[in-house]
Length: 326
Image (tube, rainbow, N blue to C red; front, side, top):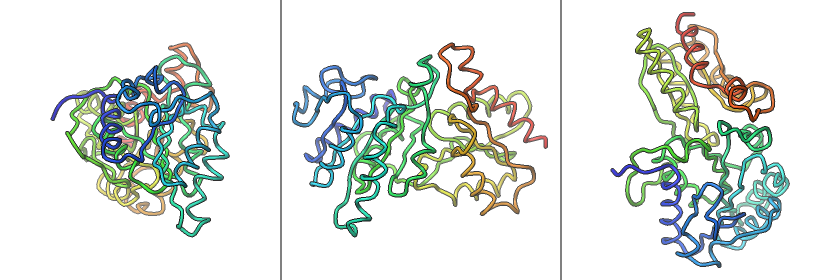
């Protein structure tokens, strides 16, 4: 399989689906002539024209409202929110409208809307351009949430998202855009709700998604090289639907579990996953559950301070070492 950047894999998925289905259109700020803030949509205006690749004013609530209406009328829009932080401006349309209409209309009106958005820190963008807000959206029934960690899953999960009749929040880690990996050619849709083993191991299980998968794998490799501790890394791929069965099976096999989340600790996704483990695999735990999350603090601009707030690989490795020896 060819090597491809994460950003290029996303573009390939968009091209594949726009070629296959003329109902797919792109909506967002600076996505047309400029090619998007992270250049994911570069060249698509020239390929598909302004009717299917639409630049918009700076109004996130309007973008998602436009996308929701277009989806209700039979199109399959992909809306880009330039930074995940800005999704707060679209919460009414996303949570109260897009997520609820399929239910309210007795499944007579599907809402095949995809909202793509880059999330996370690591680039010094500061408190209002660096957040991971997945936990907010997990709390809204009717939304699906995909968080690919690799270029292959970026393409495969986006293909699946664009074919789903439910609204999908598609979260892209900012630091992943320049990551490279093998990507299958053609139609390689990845089903939602199926976690994958990113690294094998028998001493403990590290559960992660998006950028934290790669950080967890690097931490696990260091543990193995320095201490002989073999940590399994489970990549969730999607948070809604959540593959609880694979989580429980992994924890049952190793007896130790740690969840890694880039977002803040309090009321985070890790807390929900931890309780699911208590509900499904408590009897298999040989040590207390652990979580390594972002601190409950705004994300600073300064690189040294940002590294303290975010759950970097060194903190993951230290916590995993303590858990393996608990």
